[in-house]
Each structure stands twice: as structure tokens, then as C-alpha cells.
Length: 451
Image (cartoon, one colour):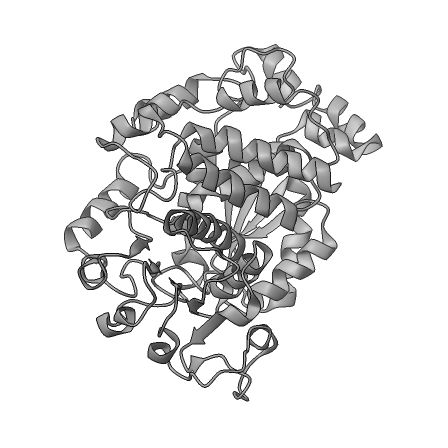
């Protein structure tokens, strides 16, 4: 990593108050009466109400707007198994994005344990505090087991973002890349490099939106995942196909799309030379992509290329997904984040990019954005993500029967969502002062709004 970037990042994290998040009160506390209502003796009243009806916790506490960001640090992006404590900066960053992008409060929780059943038991025990659980940076295959167990045990949304957030944003980008190239997702041959949490979940999502299983070739560190291999676990077996290909280079011949969720510099120029016309190349390893952006473009000028980097066109990043998935789930008191909600997010994100770009975002980035080969996805902070994606997720939750609360007026809901964050000052330090002064959800003036 760039040493200058290292220095600036360390200064950023340590300057002033250490870390990136804190806790601020949301009710008045300036008088003795305020404090008597906040704690003893007044606090006994909501305790009694919740004891009689557990769902009133959503009315009288922060549960309905609080997410746990949980990790054991066993698979931290770009650095591997660093353990719970070293993973804390990443989890704090995730909590910060929840707040600034969707006005969701989040606690980062780092657990020093790699035993799956103990992790499940611990998370289950703390779940009453939260309206949702965001699992993060837990290694495969354990992450699949932990998420499924928790979904069966808890009645609040549980989402492993490395799986589903990644899969959703990749699916949205691929949908738009196919639209631009005139290819149909049902017809394209897709190579997915990396068969961990992100790779498996991406393959599953692409099947849900129309890709054919026989057209998906997955590659791990030992080569193509084929029926001839005897070393596959149950997750990889799900995508084993009959093929003569055994290497990544062989799999790339005539492929329409490459999706890399593996490690840097493993894709050669000669590999992409053999791809089909107008290839789609998503080299998403961070901080070093599977193939350098400039080298890929020089080799295949007809390609649509995306990376996970902010300094290149078409950044594919989970921040376009997880805040709004949880916002829609929390606002409908959903019991889970199901496939219907995830597909709704895919479609909503893809459609935003096809519309004229957000003017405020163009000002912040200092350039024009127009749907095409270098603009597949909306940019982080685009105000339509909060409204359009959240509303699509909430509607899908209600339609699919997992919502315990219905939103009566979607027009009022849009108004409430729009007021939750200060999009005009998204990239400004004024955001911090703005949030410290507002009450409720960024000062919504709609008194009928209960969100």
C-alpha cells in the first residue's frame, strides 16, 4: 500500500477523539426532570410496557434503528485473519457508513472466537439489543453456517455482507453491463475467480437473476471447480460442472464475463485476449485487482472494466447496498432479509445508474456521469440510493410476507427517507456538526412519520 496513504489514514483515525464513531443522546438532558425521565424513576414506565409487549421495544428504545456489526476478524479484506482487535477499525468504518449513508446507528462488536457454534451462541445472546445483525469479515465456509444458524434462531434480519452485499452490487453492475453490450444474462459465459463467501454468493445471485448454472465456471486456488475434482466441499460442489477446463486461462477462452473476488495480479493480458467480443471484466480484489485497470483496457479496448477501487471508473462497492437493505428491513420490522428483498435491491441500483446522474454528486466528484461503459453504478452518497433502493426493499419485504409493519403511505415514507441524511453536505465536515445538532432522523418535519 502507498506509504503516504498509510500515514494519512493513521492521522485520520487518531486525530482528535480516537476512532471514527461515538454515541450521542437523542433526547433532552438539560434539566433534572429530563434526567428523571431518562433514567430513574421515569424509565420504569417503558420497562413495564415492553415487559407486557416485547414489540414496544421498537417504540420506546433504539432497537429499531440499531444494527450490530459483528466479526471475529478471521477474513478481513486485503489483510486476512488478523483477529478480533485488529479488525476493529474496519468495523468502526462500517458503523460510520451505516450512519452517514442511511442514518442507522451501529455498534461494532469484535468477538475473539473462531468456533462457529460459540459465535452463534454469543450473537444470539446479544441479539435482543439490536434490530439487525450485520456479519462481517468471517472466513468461509464457517460464515455460511453461522449466518444460516442465526437466521433460524433469530426473528431479526441477519446478513453476512461479504456474501450478499457483494453479490447484489455485482449483479446490479453485470445487469447494466449486459444492457450496454446488448448481451443477455441467460446467454453469457461467466468465470468467477474466487470460491469463498463472495464468490459462492455471487454465483447464487446470478442464477437468481437469470444466469444458467452450466454457463458459470468457478475457479479457486487449485483451478476450475469441476465434477472431476475430489477435493470439493459441499458449497463448491454446488457449482461443479462437467468441463475439460482445469485452469483459469482455459476457462477464460470465449468467456463473456470475468468476476474476480480473489487476489491481485492473477489474471494475465493473454487471458483476457481470448475472451469474447465486448468482454465484461470485474477485477474486484482490493487493494490490488486481479488485473491492472490500465493494462486490461490497453489489452481489450472493447471491454467494460470495473474494480473495487475509488480511483478508477466503475467502482463496485458494498456501500451501495448494505445501508439501504437494512434501512428497508428495519423500517418494516422485517424478520429477515430474503431473496425477494435482495433482488429488489439489485434492480433498484441498476435502474438508478440508467437515469440522469445526481447533480450534487457530479459537483462533489467534479465530473459528469452518463450511463455507459465507465458509469455502470451510481456513486456512493447518491441520494436516490436511500430513497429508491430502501423503498424497493421495504416493498419487497411487505409483498413477501416478512414485514411485521406495513408502510401506509410510500409518498410519506419517501419524504421521511429524504430527510434522514444531509446529502448536499455528504463530503463535508459539516456533516458531523449537522448530525450532532439534529434530533430524530435528521429533523424530519413530518409529524405523522413514525420512522
